[in-house]
Structure formats: structure tokens, C-alpha cells
Length: 433
Length: 141
Image 1 (spheres, rainbow over the protein chains, first blue to last red):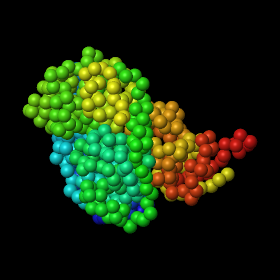
Image 2: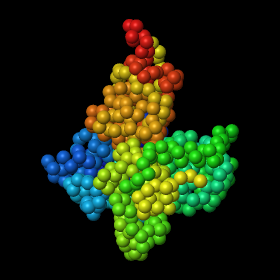
Image 3: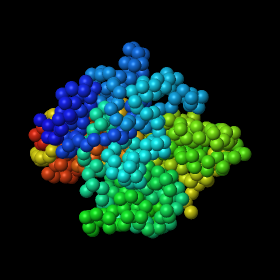
Image 4: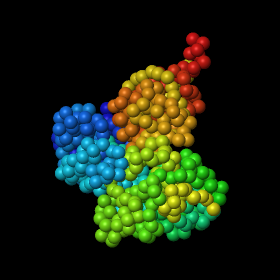
């Protein structure tokens, strides 16, 4: 018996009044809401999910029963938790596809199966025709989906969720493929967790006792704090300089990888924290931790714990997906130079920004140096890397955290300059001052 | 035998051997869904599989791919047969729902202190009851 209170229109959806796909979607939202202990659902008109990526399982059905049937089956199982195959209708609310798999345009760069690359392209058309906007990035806020403070969203992608809550002041939990699928067809999501104002106050104070200014230091700070606070809400104060989008993008991705941070406050910077007191709200006597030289070194050593070989094969930039500013920074360092023989460089960015990089001539600079600008995916999501990659260098704490576990490679973490140096010399020479 | 009382997350009853960790688990990037093996580099269970076990853990962390990886583990026949956890989050709630295995949280005693790997667990999620038979009692029995 349902404990959640449903409105009449929600009950009608559950009873099949809007068709079988919406019925399955509402059934999942009720099971999920009750698992959480939510009292009700909330309306959302901003969903960021993951439906398009091909899998061997979808490909097998596509081969037997056609591409459309394979994608309907895939959506039913992985986005509605339904083993019965239901035809996917058009989405009901604003829905964006997050990062997915690489498409056929990258076929020459890696050993990905041609069939899977083609199925991704076919899925773009299938889901596009149903109103899902194929942004194909982990950073939807870079390509037009910038929710407003207070807006209820249903987003997945941990680095986007933490950005949405903390930097934009919109409200989302870390949703999953199934809950975002259900939200896209209903415009509903459980009213729980970060949707409630009282759950958005800080739980820990972090005293930052070393200067945090450049990208690498924002990543190290995030990686350390995430591991300590896990999925709680840190409030940071101390020696950070005014951050820009790229630094908070990196900080959040790091904190949500080492722990599960979905929200943080930086008093004076983030929108729900004009002061430390406001950030903490009614909470008193919260735990305080210190981030100093020692903690910075711990984060650095943890991030580099898989790396042994200084001979680097692959440099991965753009996790989360690079901004146009980051591409320009890399292009300037590469201009007029050539990558070391046997070293590959991929820069990952949303396709819409790739277009901009092409237009500005940055793509040409990167390609003349021997590198590539790629879109839609990344090595950790796709498991695709240049043939024979053993040792990776990256400026992303998130990628350095996940890639060794997912693909078995060694990973070096450092600054953009360290990574470009490695690309040009084939040797890692980064380190902590 | 020790009896714990908690709240149903996903209904159903199951019994099996416990696999316990005091560390939170990542789904995407933390497990291999084909085998149910923990792959996170610095995790205390790295290399061990939860396939067919009752997974006792503090909660979920990391990527929002959590649910889809446990979902895939179910499709591959490598999911845990039950879940007992402490901290409710959207990742673990949705993950438990799509794993279709009995799951319980909000227990009246700390399951990570009471239950050890190898203990035999009988859980009835609809009633919110977890019965723990310690490994030592089992070997004596």
C-alpha cells in the first residue's frame, strides 16, 4: 500500500491514464519514493539523464528485431526498470541527454566497435525525435541548461549535480538512469533530500589554511574534502581566491568522486551562502576540519597512487568537459609544437563548443600539434583510449580517480602545464612543490 | 541469534551469507557489473564479489551511475541477494529498487558492528526484520 501522497493527476498516471510508458514511469517513482521515505513527488521541468548509450545487450536486440525495438527495449529496462518492452513516447518535460558514448567520427582514434558507434548515432536520432536534447556532455550548464536558483531539477552525473546545487542554487538529488527516465515522461521526482530547504545547510566547516588558487589546487582541495565528509555538506572558508566556473567545475567533480558530495557552500561566492552563519543555518557545533600543507600532500599522493612509470602514452584533458577557455589554454601551450612520438592527446569538450573551437582555429592548432578534440564521451565513460595505452596523464582529479579502476591503466594527476609537458616529451615530470 | 529491526526499502525475504564493509561503495567505477566484484582501487573489498551475498555496507558514494551498475549486475545475475545499509541516499535507494532484492535500512543497532562477513542472515524486508547467526555459532552448530 502506497505511503506517499499522490495527487489525482499522479494517480491517473499510475492507473495508466496516460499510457503504458507513463504508467511504468509512475510505478517506478512510487517504488523509489517509498524506498527513500519521501512523502510526495514534486514537479520538475528540468531533467538531465542518460538513455542513448549503446550496450552489447541493446545491440543484440537491435540485430534481432531492428534498431527501434532495441532502443525501446533498452529504454524500458534501463530507464523505466521494466522488463516488459514498452514503446517510448515523446518526453513530457525539458529533458537533456548527458555524456554518452563516442560516435562514428572518432572511429580512427580507438578500437571501439563500429557497430556500437553506429548504434550511438542511431540512438541520437531515435531519442532526438522523442524530444530528448542530445547535449552529450557531463556539463549541461555549459551548453544552455542553466537552472535558476530554487528550480527543482532531476539531474544525474555527479559533477553536474554538485554544480547545480552549489553554484547555481537549483535543487536536485543525484538521480540515476531509471529515475531520470521516469521523470522525463512524468515531470515528477520524489520530494526528498536536496529538494527540501532544511536539508541544504552545511554540516562541516573546512578551514583552508594553504592558498588555493590554480586549477590543480582546487582539484586537490575537492578530492581531500570529499574523502573526509563523504556525502555531507562542507562549508569552505580561508585562503581560496575568487574561483571561476572552471575551478568550481573541477573542485566539485573531485569532491563527488572521492566522497559523494552533492552540495557545498563557499560563503561570499555560492548563492545560498552570503555568510558562514547563513550557510550553516540552524546547525550549531558542526565538525571543523583543516586543509593545510599535509592534507594537500595526502590528496596529491592518493591521486597519484597508481602511477609508477614516468613514460606516458596518453594525455587526457577535459574531465568534466573543457570550456572554450580551457581549450584555448591548451592550444596556446601546444602552438607550433609536436607531440612526442608515441604519445596521444585528447581534449574532451561538448560538441557545441567543439564547433566554436573549430571556428576560432583552436582545433587546427591542437591537430597540427598531433592532438585531437573529441566530443560526446570520455575514456572513463566509454572505456575507449588510444590503442595500447598503459600510462595516462590528466589534469582531472575525477579521471585520475576512476580511470585506473575502470581500465587498469596507471594515472598521473597534475596541472595542465604538467600534462602538456608530458605530451611533448613523453615523460611525466610533475610533482608537488 | 541477534535480531535487528529496521525499515523496508525493497520488500521480500531472503537468507544468505553476509559480506560486510565499513566503507561506502561506488557503483559506476567501483564495481564490475558482470561479476559483482568491487574494483575501486583503495577499497577494502577490492577483488571480492557480492554476487549472491547479502551486502552490508554504510551506503553509496560516487557517480550517479550507481543504480544502473547494480541494475546491470542484476541483469548479469551478479547482484547481491539482499542489501542492508545505514545511510539513505538517492543513489542507494534507486539502486536497491532496481536490483529487485530485499533491502532494509534504519536498523535499531549498527549493522556494521553487529554483522561480520560470513555470518548467516535471514531478512524479511516487509517486516523489517534481520536475524543474524554468527559465524562462530554456525561452525559450532
